[in-house]
Image (tube, rainbow, N blue to C red; front, side, top):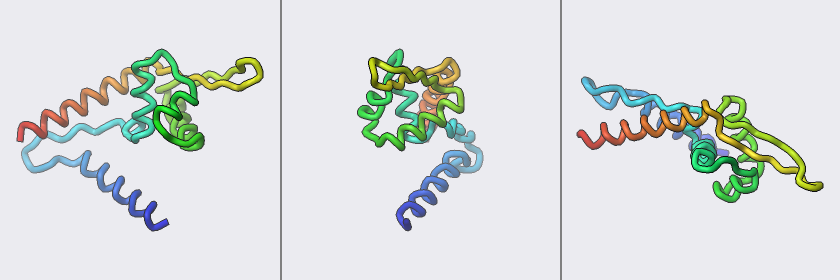
Length: 125
């Protein structure tokens, strides 16, 4: 449990550093979309940005994550309007398919632009 608490504190401190200017007189660093900045959610959105759709199992294999972890992160993205989920049966087997929405596509494009800006800023030093 101590490891989880330490990891959470580390993530919180890292998030604060992303939002704060690096030093006086410098432009402020971009504030990343917290909904997709997390590794698994960024992976989901990125994978869907280059594929028309992906199944739950495709995403699970691609991201090397558990059912529960993928389910929680996919639900957050769905609630945020970034992905759409459709559930249906193929024969007698349930199947879940995900697609990126227009809002999700815009969010990932903006995220990439912000990341590129951050890289440019660090190279200018």
